[in-house]
Image: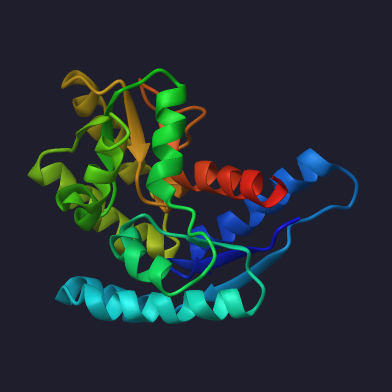
Length: 230
């Protein structure tokens, strides 16, 4: 079994889900007392969020690259950035290590295409929805990507940073996001990418929405196990 390096803490709530999901999937596949070989580097999210807000992505890339190198030094055979938004600096992270970086958008696009869907809505932070680093990566896989209107984008972003990253999951926000999903469906979205790992704390892909919801944390975790057991 290869050792999975998790670059987490962005936020720790969703990183805990990565740890749980990866170990559960390894146990399901191998049985018995098996669990995953994992090393974790968990950053201070306040520092990362400040760099995001100021637009200093170069500094954010250096911060994550340093931590990724430490994961490799600790024995990681592959590395995951446990956050959609921070794939903005994926190239800087990959350049700092000699082991593969398992890109979340690639794994997600593969799952969407496997479901026979080519037109998707994207929910996430404002950085993920409004900048091109994530949407363009999905487009290389042949996906057409829709994002919510400005007011809905602002609400999704607010919910992520003001509620979910602080461990607050509110019924009102759940209803609001279901309405946002419905508006994307009405515009032609055949499925919705939950393009922020915290959104899976609010929305249940097995129960919510009028179209399929693609849970990026689950998808990324399964892809990590695939790679670790290959």
